[in-house]
Image (cartoon, rainbow, N blue to C red):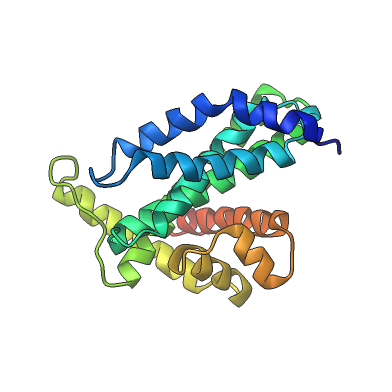
Length: 232
């Protein structure tokens, strides 16, 4: 596969500074005041540079679409290493990063395949949405395991909603416990220990694509387990 020539990498980085700032501003608006926007932008620049280095124009995706999740993931990765975050906030940041890595992998796989029918496209969207829901729920289970209950917003979550959510989380915890050890290990490293899929792949002696495919497969399996238990 053909990557961007070195002479064009600087141009991609220069022409997408606005994208980095836009993503950083959106994330910054939800953070405590003492977190500096410039720090988020600096982390986003790392993601942009990485995207420019590995971008493959023939994939069919525009560079801005390709770079979006890498920029956002780099910012969340930087935030997760800051000491100001509570455990629940750290887990939320990790879930955002994992969701971004998952969507990035899905987009890459989709661009590498032929055009799908409307029915196939709808099924792809359904499966992707289901797996993203599992990413969120798995991050909540990690919080529960650490004896730090998920944030409960009384303005948006009624008591019966909260009870139902916790029942789903308990079902997911049981489904994770039933996974084979290699799969449980990936979930533990990603959702409990905060490792990125790249770091997990390196630890296991594989490329990131291996960890991404394994993560996606596990998400699908957990989603099916929840459905079988009547929790999804």
